[in-house]
Length: 280
Image 1: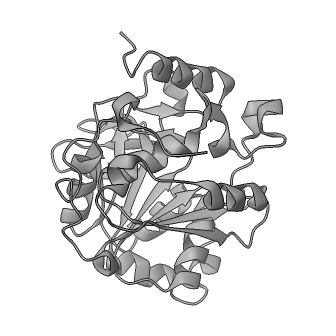
Image 2: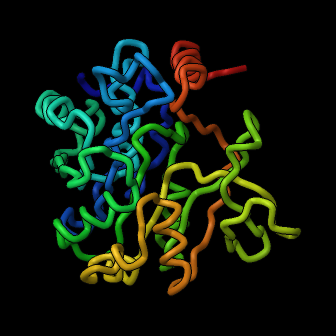
């Protein structure tokens, strides 16, 4: 379960969020919460004895690719929000080694396990709220789905999300199945709606698993019983609840996007990796 050699990585290291160096003191960097608690029921037998983000892709766990993408962008404070088969995620953390390019920066990587009190792993939004309440971290936070990947340099999307000072989500087209669209995006002002059938200038999009929650959003989530009173379970429900009190913006991504939530998509990403990141 070791980190990847960037020379053969399908992820583009680019310049990094901090231009290849850690220019911001680690204690001031935004934390990244990676959701790794889902059961992955659509993957059938593949996840009966393995959490979905730890499924092997070309001999390495899928989570290796997610972490590498984040580390090469400059993130160092990473929390894994686990529920299903927590012991497997804990073992992964113990064995994980960052890519050599990251180790050469002489900056330490904070990789921590946060156990979701809902052991079923069915509530991604609730898992984020529970982690916010438990960790009491300051500033904004990034949230990443542990079963999706934007394999290009995520620096641009991360900077655009955080610089707005608002809560936001990376969105984009998902041409495989129109039924997957769960949001609508207005390119004129970057606003989003939670009805993918919203009329023009909105167009249907899918959230691509990278979110930024501004400091005010984090404060709201840390308010006692805030999530309970709003019956929040999923991330979509969390964004809706925050959207009633804060503006929610979208950042459009037209680059590659992968989701390993079904056997077909899992195989598609394997083909992408084996081709050296070129799907032709």
